[in-house]
Length: 287
Image (cartoon, rainbow, N blue to C red; front, side, top):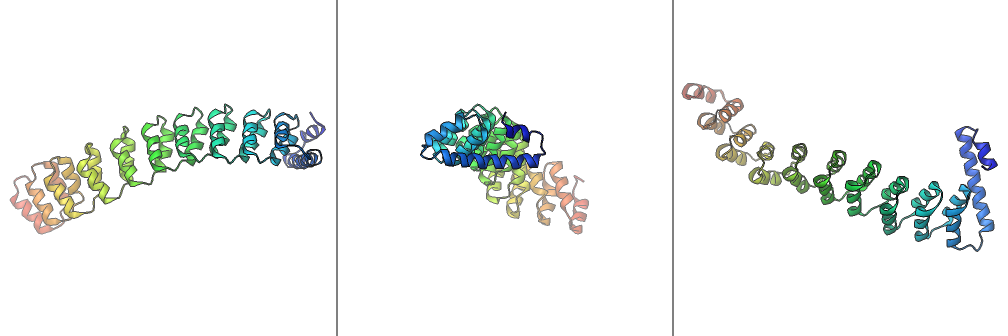
């Protein structure tokens, strides 16, 4: 252990940091004085093999060659040096190589944090064994179809939830609402949908009656709601439409004429016109 480290070991953190800064400056001066004429490859060797961490760090600071920085990130003896090399990497292909090949999770995570390749990020969010790396990949993932892929194919609920929270595309939400195997995600997607054309399509075409009910309940077109309330073959869809329908005359007709008790009750509950209520009470044999 060097004299600097022996002295710093017994000092408060702020004083140790001060010593660290001084050591880095000294190391940079050392390289400036002794490194004149040294090639980038020689600096890379210093960064990977020198026993003094501050000298290694100073060598990394002087390097700009992306290929050499990637090599240092994967081969340097000191973990801190490897992480500093990753932090200077900007080349996405080299970052991808480090991210996919590196076994140390610190370097692996740091490389993933700088990735912009959306397909690779989606793959890591689903498949990586380390939870921190999966979360880091998810943080940088923004592509809506790939987020949907993570939700549809992922086995880990925390990652699926993180992906779902980043969804913005109504078409992607509609796909989740129809196709996801988990009812929780289907219902959550429906709650976030408000695009009337998509809701109409779901109300008409979805195979899951729960999705249809949720879509009908969010429709605002009164003509369309009346059509569902009167014509749909499934009483549950008719109830959902009636609960949003405002047309008092139409509600009165449904309260008297629908063959299902639940639909009639739902219509009667929505009626506010006292004359219509009185007429139904006097004329309808159902009540």
